[in-house]
Amino acid sequence: MQNQLNTSAVNHAPSRVASSLRTVAFSLLVDRALSA
Image (cartoon, rainbow, N blue to C red; front, side, top):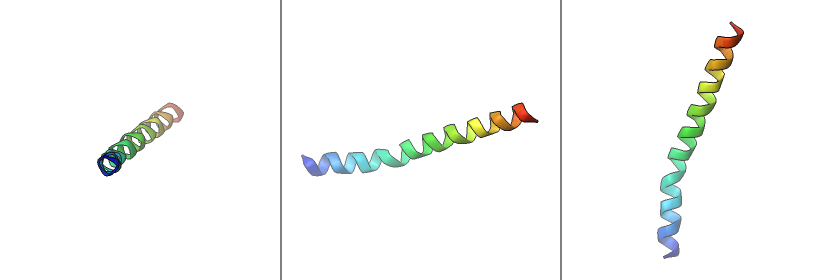
């Protein structure tokens, strides 16, 4: 049971990182558009 939890957490980590990176990139684009 513990191993299943660990592998699912590891599997979900990349998508979480990707979504946060996407959010950061989007806010940077908005910042640049507003300041331009």
